[in-house]
Amino acid sequence: MRRRDFIALLGSAAALPLVARAQPAVKPVVGFLNVASPDGYEHHVAAFRAGLKERGYVEGENLMIEFRWAEGHYDRLPGMAADLVGREVSVIVANTPANLAAKAATSRIPIVFTTASDPVKIGLVPNLSRPGGNTTGVTQLNVEIGPKRLELAHELIPGATSIAFLVNPNDALRATTVTHDAQAAAVPLGLKLHVLRAATDAEIDAAFAGFARLKAGVLVIGVDALFNSKSQLLAELSLRYGVPAIYQYDEFADAGGLLSYGGSIKESYRWAGIYTGRILKGERPGDLPVQQSTTVELIVNLKTAKALGITVPMSLLGRADKVIE
Image (tube, rainbow, N blue to C red; front, top):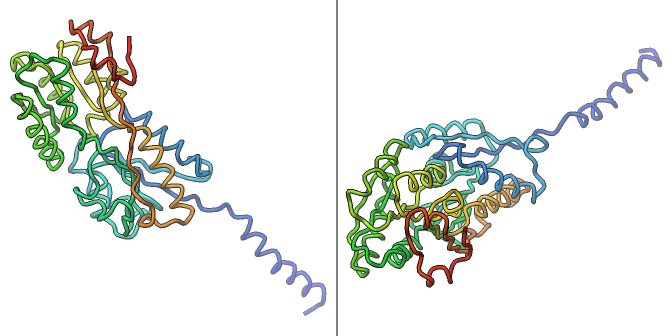
C-alpha cells in the first residue's frame, strides 16, 4: 500500500467515532394512557408537562409523548396498554383504571399512576412508602374523603331527606367502593341514597333530567376519571336542570358547579410529571414513595347558588377556601 493511501485510510477510520457522536440522541418516549378523552383534560396534561419541565424534559425537544385516550371505552384499555408495551416506551403514565391495565400488561416498564383511590386497596402497590416493583405515583385519596361530600350536602340542604349519588358503572370496582362508602355515610345522617348510573354524555344528561322526580335535595357526583373530563358538561347540566350538585375538583365549581370538595388533580399530574422525569434520569419507581395530596379545598360558587335559589349556610361559607361571586 502506498503511503498516501495508508494515511487516507487512517484518516477515514479516525473520523468514524466523530460521525457516530454526531448522531442525534434517541429521545425517550412516554406513554400517556387515560380512560377519558382529551377534551377536558387540557389543564391536567399541561400540569404533567410542567412537572416534566421541572426535571429538564420538554416534549418535542428531548422527549416524546404517545397519548392513548380510551374515550370512556374501558374495554379498550388492555389493548392500548399492550400497544404501549409493544412500542417499548420508557415510562407509562396512567390514571385509574388505566393504570391497572398497564400493571397487568407489564412488570418491566416503569408505571407512574394518578388515582383518587387508595393505591394499596386497589392493588397498584403493596406499600406507599416503598412501593417496590415497577410502579409508583400520586394519590389524591378523594375516594377516602367521599363521605365528607355527603356531610357537606346535608349541611347545604339540611331539610333534605334523600340525596342522589351518581356513579360510572363501567368502572365497576370503583363504583362499588364509592357506593358502599356513600351508603355507610348516609345512614347516620338519616338520608336515603338514590344511586344513579351513567357512562355516556346521553346517560349523564338523563340522570340530571330525572333528578327532580327523585325529590332528592342534592346530587353528589362519585369519584370517576371519566367524570373528571366532564366538569364543563356536569356544571352546564346542573344549571340547565336546576340541580344542586357537588363534585370533587375545583374545575367543576369554576365551570359553574355549586360546590367542590377534594384534592387537586392538577397538582397530582404535576407530580406525575416530576416522577416521570426522575425515572427517566435513572431512579427506580419502586424506590419512589407514593405521593399523597394533603391539600383539600372547599369551593363554593355563590353565583350558581343564587341561580338555583339556594342560600348557602354561613357555616359553609366560613370554611370555604374559595368563594366564586
